[in-house]
Image (tube, rainbow, N blue to C red; front, side, top):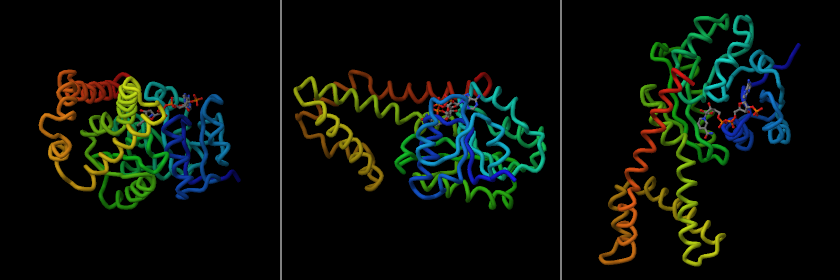
Length: 284
Ligand SMILES: NC(=O)c1ccc[n+]([C@@H]2O[C@H](COP(=O)([O-])OP(=O)(O)OC[C@H]3O[C@@H](n4cnc5c(N)ncnc54)[C@H](OP(=O)(O)O)[C@@H]3O)[C@@H](O)[C@H]2O)c1
């Protein structure tokens, strides 16, 4: 009899690694209880090195895991799903978690509940928008489920999803209508943060600070300031004012940032990512 795995990933890329290898390093799931599939060797080495089972065969994952993470790009989803044996009965899947931007719960339900023989209910299918800091246990995942999911059934599945995602960071259940915007902030956000760090580092290097030191200064300043927001609960304007003395260097820099349109650029970024995520629901 073939082995049953606790967790399966279809897609082995950046986000699957952040989640799956995050689970392993936090000890939530043993590497030997995870199976992952991808068509090429691009991403398999880090999984193999940890002792995870890897395969090219999506149906091997689909037919052997209890909790399935769908972790391919949204534009590959239709093709991937068209090849899955969703008509197979008796496979062990109990929970399906899609981490794909855009693809709505309704579409997942059509595929894995209405048009399949999997014997799943809407309370078994979840959308999760995680982020890459999950790899170091500092992630933030927003979670939603179909509005037609039945509360009693959800009480059996949702805690499992929350507890998995909480093991690699924070997790919050939100309405599906907010998923695209939340993902535009927390899912895409690490990329914005790295870009900001890069720009701050270049600015410091231009002023003569060695690059290594500049990276430490920039990343630690962002991390420490973020912790102040989370731990003090104070409004960001109040925290900003604490640094900004009259006629000083900080206000001069803030003026330069405002002239450069930093606020509106960041607001535009969230708007652009939300819009693109919504578009991918219809046209990945
Ligand atoms: N990256 C993030 O920060 C982030 C955050 C939140 C959500 N997400 C979501 O996570 C999903 C994956 O994103 P990613 O950044 O991890 O992308 P990625 O690094 O490009 O990984 C995509 C994975 O899908 C695999 N794949 C492609 N075609 C496949 C097929 N036919 N069957 C099975 N696997 C296939 C790729 O295989 P190979 O390994 O062979 O190339 C790769 O392992 C996306 O839907 C995205 O919306 C990502």
